[in-house]
Length: 87
Image 1 (cartoon, helix red, strand yellow):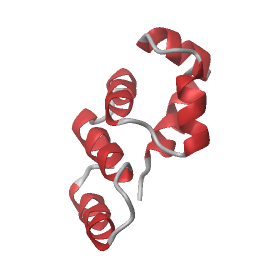
Image 2 (cartoon, helix red, strand yellow):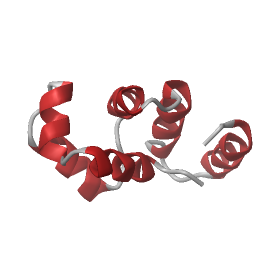
Image 3 (spheres, rainbow, N blue to C red):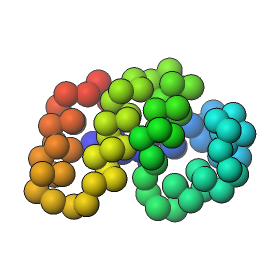
């Protein structure tokens, strides 16, 4: 299953996190904090996906579900997203 950390890793292959923060108009620490936490916000995931030429909608949905508290519904939706997305 893809996670927003996979998206961030793809982004880091292109430029470092400080450069991405500048490009996206974020505070320098934003992406480092997200990496430490293990997830991106839906808005940041969408912006990175757009810059990388990836499916913006899929990444926004994945980020939104990642942000949910652990539950049976979250697990079910993550499984469903895996089947439905092109990622």
